Image (cartoon, rainbow, N blue to C red):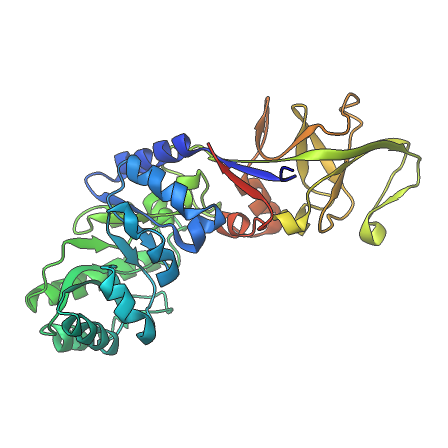
Amino acid sequence: MQHRVVLTIDLKQLGENYQAVCGIVAPSDVMPVLKANAYGLGVAPIAQALVAAGASRIAVAEPFEALQLVNLNVPVQILSGILPDEIDEMVAHGIVLPVVSFESAQQLSAAACAQQTTAKVHIKLDTGMGRAGIHWTEAETVLAQMATLPGLEFEGIFTHFPLAYEQGSDFTDIQVKRFCTILATAESLGYHFKYIHAANSDAINNALITCQAPFNLVRCGINLHGAFDAAGSLRVPLKPVLQMTTRLAQVRTLPAGTPIGYGHTFKTQAPMRVGTVCAGYADGLPLALSNRGTVIIRGVEVPIIGRISMDYLTVCLDTVPEATTGDCVTLLGRDGDAETQVDTWAKLKGTHAYDIICSIGSRVERRCV
């Protein structure tokens, strides 16, 4: 038996998107960010495709993600913090680790010395994100404290932007100035960084300064999938890599006045051909598509009617009279001239593309082509 709902991932287009980003930010390098199992798409084949396309290092969020990629023969880097009980194993596997405080630097140093090795680390600065890292007001003191710790190779230094989706953001400019001031201080203390990075997907599109010297590395996640935060602009020519399909389970004609679905949020005003589609919010369809979104059947966009339920949704088939049980239904992607993309769902839900992709259900088959 095959899965009813299938998410097809175009690895060729993924590689082309990666190379398009490389072309825009050159001479900076591009580090794909594949946290949360590549946003739920399946990290192993995606990482392999990106390495084949030229990626020389991969970033993730936490140790279990990192361990899945140690056989790629490229550096794997954890961007977020690391817990004390995780340090020994990560050092043993050669994972590039974040330094978020003097205490974390001491712990990493002790682990590296105990294993008679050197741990590669990147210093994480909090220049305004307010989430993790060495706060910019304390950076000079902390940098001086940890400059001589043994067993550490300070390979990189980085920060993160909360408002990079805003073109011309004054706060992003402030963060860059803070970062550059700290960078100069670090260099005066004897630090020599191979990688200096701040740009995420939003910054690549909206803050060109973060892709230029002194920065020489950018972090790219959502853009690789051909999606981006709709609040900003899109500077990189990208194409979607996702196609989500299912099947039409039933077709029938219902009389006028028939209520549809939970809550009876829709009622037919005249006799209507109604289709029941094998997909619901358990598969990742936002509930906000109820009575607002569309799906594509036989190349025609048809409206969703009634409230989406866990396993099914209903559509009006008046414009596709030839539709029949078993027909392919395109939820995301293109069929003929009709197209629905991740950003369309994000706007209807009032969220962003990350949320949509990460919410695709576990029973949906991920199929890489």
